[in-house]
Amino acid sequence: MELYGLDPAKVRDISETLMDERRRLQVVPACVLEGTTPKERMLFGVRHGLYSFPTVELCSFLRERIRGRRAIEIGSGHGVLAKALGIPATDNRQQEDAEVRAHYAAIRQPTVPYGDHVEKLDAAAAVENYRPAVVIACWITHCFDPSRPDAGGSATGVDEAAIVASCDEYIFIGNEHVHAHKPIWALPHEKLTPPWLYSRAINGSRDFIGIWRRER
Image 1 (cartoon, helix red, strand yellow):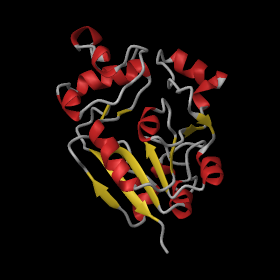
Image 2 (cartoon, rainbow, N blue to C red; image 1 turned 135 degrees about the vertical axis):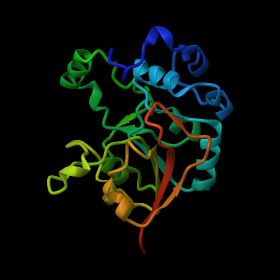
Image 3 (cartoon, one colour; image 1 turned 60 degrees about the horizontal axis):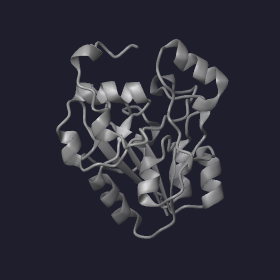
Image 4 (cartoon, helix red, strand yellow; image 1 turned 90 degrees about the vertical axis):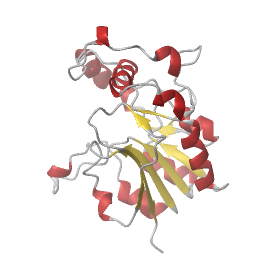
């Protein structure tokens, strides 16, 4: 397994700290993750197909932002965050496809462990179906634009500009380096970097919450 130069034999396994008795990621207070290192979080994330780790503080922040409005999570993956917030969890679940699973098997990495409650809907279909006021996303990939190849993205990625235009508030949790080239950075937004955000990123940049509001 390629672990970006990490030697798994020399890095503590934090699975028992971050997973419940069913071996599912659980929401923990930020102080629990504060006691881990970037290398430990990277090893844990790669081994289990996880990218960001929800904290009690993040859930409290998002509940305050939602304030009882209709909300959904897109690209939910394991669905732990949406479940903690009591909102619908949606994902295109593309890593269940045979070709994608074969690719991950070839590079000796696990696919995303989709939660049983995560509804198979891509982002556009989820917004069309639920008509949410608030859309939440963690670590999703934006749609590739052939006219802007330098921005990266994926052919199956999310048209985030369309999401911003279709809801009152789009809240994205990510990493400054990993998500530096999102096209929606060109749109008016607010960026927060609270200390209680944690992910598997090991590049030294900050994790962030980006908030985009629909222009009226």
